[in-house]
Image 1: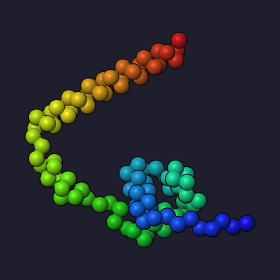
Image 2: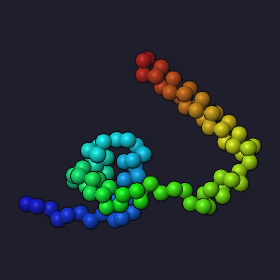
Image 3: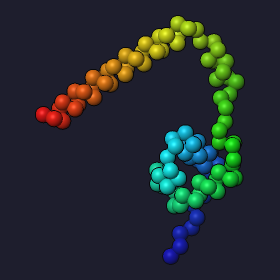
Image 4: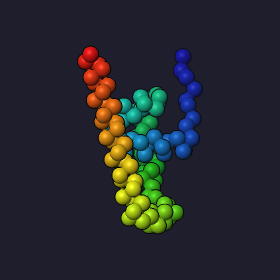
Length: 100
C-alpha cells in the first residue's frame, strides 16, 4: 500500500535547507531529523531553491547592529562569558554526581 505524498510548505522546505547548510550534517541525518521519507527530497529542494535559502540579514538587522555601542557589546560578552562559566560548573558538578 502506497502512502499519499506529503505536501511540505515552502517555508518548511527553506528552513530545512537552511538547517542542513548551517549544521553540516548528512542528508540522511537531516531527513531523519525532520521526518522526511527520503533524503533525495533535500536534493530536489536544493535544485529547486538554489541559493535562495542562504538569505542575508535584512537592512533592519544591520541597522540594529550598527546602533549598538561598544559598551553594549562588552556587556553582552561579559554576560555570555558568565553564562559559560556557570554551565561549565554545572557540567563539572553533574560529572561528579555521575561518578558518585
